[in-house]
Length: 282
Image (tube, rainbow, N blue to C red; front, side, top):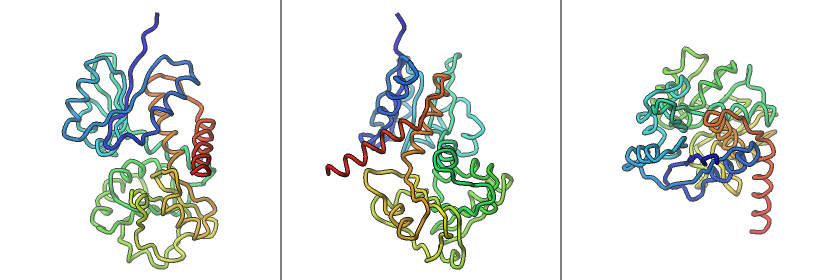
């Protein structure tokens, strides 16, 4: 009899996570014998909980807020994209029991933008709001697409500048504060802060989005986030949240663990349909 292999996501808070559902659907779709659970793990006990998980035979782990930087420190080895991001969202136990850390957030965003929504990044003017770990994870794959400009804006311009300097060798990336956005326009604006989940937005000037431009919020919720709503109010051709990115980054982690790449569009469609149904019934 084949043995069920164990996977999990650690984070705090974690009860809202859709990851167990997504990986269950992936396993059913690809015929993989595995289980995947969500576990509330605060930063203070992350190292001990992770060591115990792998010692008990766990094969792979996802790490979300606030554990990605700790997972980066915990890993024995890092992929290049994890090294660049200085954050890890996927850990895998290798054949020699060493732990490899990877970051699938960037490729998850890239796949959702370009494959699922047909957004062209080559030659585009891109603006990223916020200068935290989420921004670090998505800047390198965005620069690989050779946008004409990528600007990181943050209330503390120094933090944005630090990220821009780290990735300057990869392409045209710059930093500024919100006051210096006046009279600029962008094809794509990405919100990499979590502020819009609580209804907050940074001071975005009018006419920041080009006609036919798109908005993308890395966060997701059952209702439209404040940034998605802002995009719609500013005539975005598409104003999207991060549900598709969540599924796409999960698919990349699943491939790393199982060597099988699940088909994502049906899963995204199902989750979006369920969300719409919940909103209708609510």
